[in-house]
Length: 107
Image 1 (cartoon, rainbow, N blue to C red):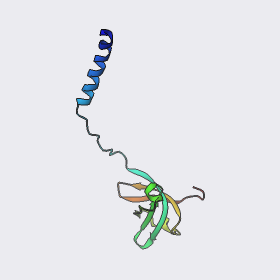
Image 2 (image 1 turned 90 degrees about the horizontal axis):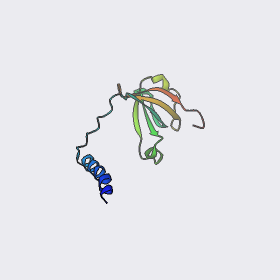
Image 3 (image 1 turned 60 degrees about the horizontal axis):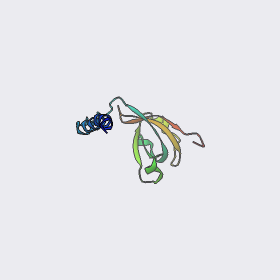
Image 4 (image 1 turned 180 degrees about the vertical axis):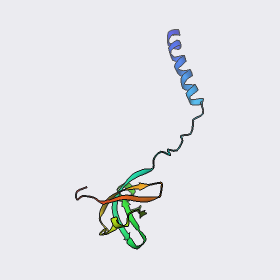
């Protein structure tokens, strides 16, 4: 029985210390400047360089979430129509879409 206590006691002490130690808050990641955006065009407003996209996530598939984005290169919006699938890169530096491309059929 004493051998069991000698083995379990340090483990229990370690667990109680870990539970009692204050949790350090996670720092927000500031190194991420860009992320990929994939979705279906809902509306195109070329005169104001804005495109509305329903993203390829759960809320987008349920048709709950639609986001508006400003496009950095207005020429990339030429020929875009509602229903077109696109990929782009959203930059947090200027809050705009970059490298807008029409997705290939089947993607």
